[in-house]
Length: 56
Image (tube, rainbow, N blue to C red; front, side):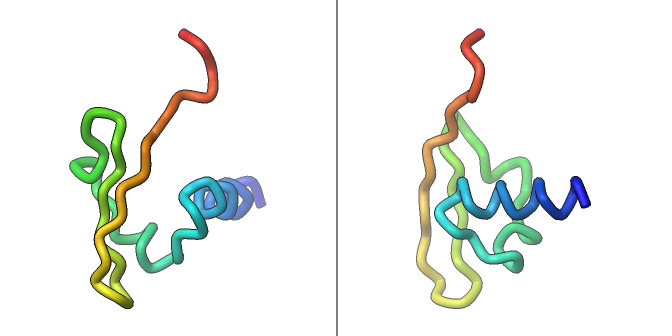
């Protein structure tokens, strides 16, 4: 249940990213605090700024 919740929250925080797009993510998609991926359904490239939830 925790894993399912974590995937749901990740999808929510990533602007409603579909499961197919989450499944295709690679570590290389996250560079310099920006997550860049191409939507499988539309081919559209999306960029999402990645910020830490906790101050360092």
